[in-house]
Length: 540
Image 1 (cartoon, rainbow, N blue to C red):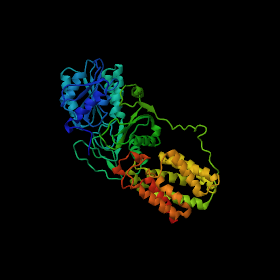
Image 2: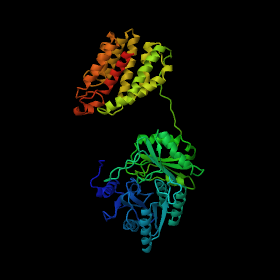
Image 3: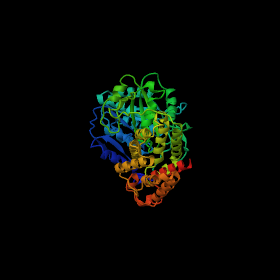
Image 4: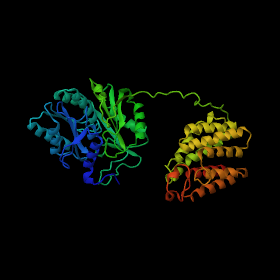
């Protein structure tokens, strides 16, 4: 897999320098590249307890992204998924530790424990006061004597950081960190493994499956489960968490493991807020990429019980771009549409033949979803089939509200329904087409002339003309010959659609941004949909 890196050996040093370059002068690094890679606060005066964390790289923004006032004092960066050396950790300790001492926050992996632990011993030999806490929040393997440390470590960074910022002594900061760790619970799920730079990708998670309880270094999870949708995925994670949580309010951290889109994370947040765990969750951190696993297409959920001053410490403001802050989880608020936008619904009426006809056309478009998406992927963004199928499903669901016995009002009602349920420019254009057709029909025009009037209005507003490689190339010739029957119209629509495959330039729509080489030989998906619709009607 191609990645935005230079040399594999330089990826961590390049990334560290990138973080520092974007910090506005707030961060610096110790000398010692490439073996010592330590990010430190540039304003640190050693008057308070220092907080150091780190480990293998690949979890960005953790850990360097959380170095700053109110959180970490320094982050020690190892190679990708590999613990930093003892000397690197010791360098970090010596650089930032003053009379108030230093707390090492270490995730529970053998390499990190050994290297941070030995560095602490060597630092104590220099006369420094150093404590160490081990984060072991992963509940995926309940019988494991040494649970892994994952995204729950961020609760420790923030709560201990707030205490240290206020001037608490090392004993207090350490004891609070240990108390926080004792209540942390985390578990993750992913649809795919991560891609380690310079190494072949492991394909162990089959299509249609998800891995539950995998680690942040790509380690195998506790089990692979069937994947159906986001709601079921969240339910599986919630079930594991609920079995181990304390009976008290919690703050939840919703973490993107690196490869899930922001849109997907928002869906997961909605499902978490509506899950069986919702009653125990009062505040949320994220959704955000906080403790990632390179590009892993998954998420993790971490919970921290609200005891003593935990919530206040989590809410304490910090100026770190990587920290999303804490928000209260609230119910979805719905505000009425402004006056003039609430649709005036025509009186519903029944007409069995019209209802059967409309449903049949909609079901044909639904069945064509995959084909049209594949065609659109060659010249657009691959969603034409889904857009038409979604609108068709909505129209089927609205049948009992439509004036099926009144052709004039039916055109307008379909236009209104499409304007509300069909996304993208195609939804707006078809809404204009049907609304204008309804207006024309109300003046007494025949079906053909009313539809042609609708097409004219759609072209005026949308700007597409014949030859511009849009649905117009199939719809216009079909309507021109519609008086000769749907068979003739279907042939005309098909001829127009196939003609779009010969056009190497689109003058309207998203395909207008595509090169001639990508367009040539591919039918415009909107024109294909129109041709299929007329062909289906002709066959009926």
